[in-house]
Length: 280
Image (cartoon, rainbow, N blue to C red; front, side, top):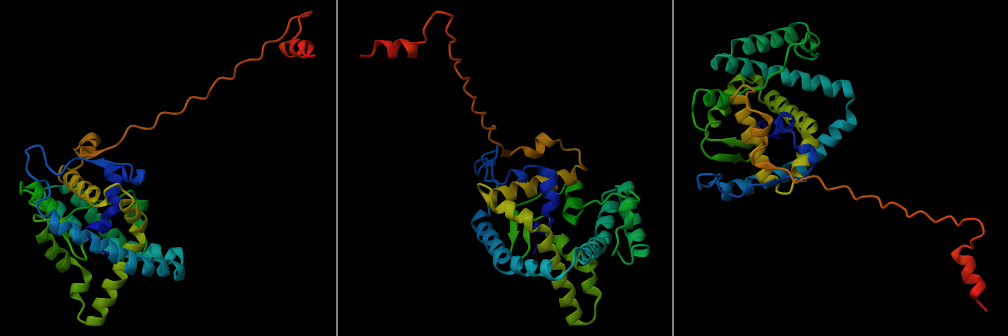
């Protein structure tokens, strides 16, 4: 569907609250300084609904058909290949951020899977315990102090920001489709990638749609996930959940304790017996 919003799996894992499927509430439309946290909301919201409609009425049916006609190992292999072709974009940004160890891990993952995993078809690096990171040029700019700027929702793409826009060009130039000389091959590769991402992220997109306010929920989750990546994982879980306040769990209804029936002593009639004796 969209490179940024289709990273929802990692957003879900980072924020850790989408599993509540809509049990979250959100803060008001202004930040602590009184300034709007989303000055372009009037434009962003229609774009958000456009993208969700595109998923519901176009990508979701196609992804369902894709799941129906392809076996599990084929879908896993396709996902592995597209994950592998993203690795140059990732390790380039690792090094640009000065994160040498992470960059070497991602470079090693790319080389291992490309050579021994048949171009990334098999995730051999996972068996070698090489971690799989996420990165972008927007994160790189954030590491070096560039402010985020207004939050943006791009049509047919998803959540972004003014700071993240240069990363769009970088993803194009580092993607394999850019280097194909045959237009039909470019379209085919791009189409398969979109279908694969829609299939992989479908359950998480549905959970966003079930939130109390899907638009605000997605915005807060995306921004906090960006901050998590910029900090190199140094942001605490409580800071990540700030702005995504959860209602207290419902108190369990106490089970009433049954009143024991008194046992009559020998020689003493039970109340029911006394009542029966008193009746004419």
